[in-house]
Amino acid sequence: MRPFEYRLTADRTEALSIAGMERARYLGGGTNLVDLMRQNIEAPAVLVDVSRLPGSIETTPNGGLLIGAAVRNSIVAAHPVVRTRYPVLSRALLAGASAQIRNMATVGGNILQRTRCAYFYDAAGSRCNKRAPGAGCDAVDGFNRYHAIFGASEHCIATHPSDMCVALAALDAIVHLAGPEGERRVPLLAFHRLPGDHPEIETVLRPGELITAIELAPSATASNSNYRKVRDRSSYAFALVSVAAGLDVVAGRIADVRIALGGVAAKPWRAVQAEQVLRGQAPTKERFLQAAEAELAAAKAFEGNAFKIELAKRTIAAVLGELAGVDA
Image (tube, rainbow, N blue to C red; front, side):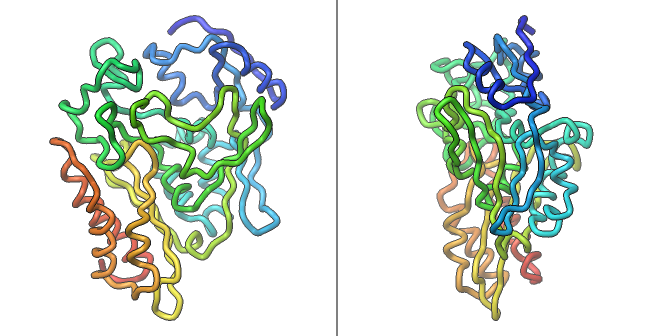
């Protein structure tokens, strides 16, 4: 690990000021960033510890929820309002990492997790355009069991690792930001970027900007929602495929539906095609499978991850069937 300056602050204005220094990075729980520093993948000159900024979970005037960026993942997962009105978020958080890591990791840091692609972490021996732009991508023709089937480019096929972000994508969450140019709000679905020609640029964050909170709106799909994660072992493993979904059935028809996929792209993947197939239809096993087929029609697999296409179809249908109370 290379030498760096450490600055602890409990004041947002001071944090933004320090972050204006060259090669400064914010530090939340540090569960990802410190790992990357140990691997010499990240080498900040200044760490701005924002873990002590005020953080709370508050009900908004419209009945939604505002979750501070410094709140620990374990606290969000256990919060009674999250568990009852946004169960998909609580279950996604509990599906991620270990209890020890959830007790350290923050909401803001979870959103900014970087890919767990093995070639990205192999700084000494592998080519990676995300780590070193223009170097090449060894994952394209390498071991790509965990890699993307949506939105990849010839420059990068890595996937986004966060379970929480998949749930937030299904909930249409809004990311609150503060920076040198003031405050702004960005939909979670627009926050992360697909790799294109510049996989090293992963989000729409501007220099010095800080994630301050996540906002969730109230909805019928949120209260009837679930998260399922398929992985190689029962704990402490990243998703091969995950599904976050919410379903609102009124008078025997699907009034509204939200579906997001994890482990399939460089960002949480919203299943828009599947949602369009389902709205206004009866909630049946056949319709759920038809919707999943429509979504996965555009998937593009590599040699090691073709199984993900069928796995994603079956997982989508299973989660929707569970929410609708039908065998799928």
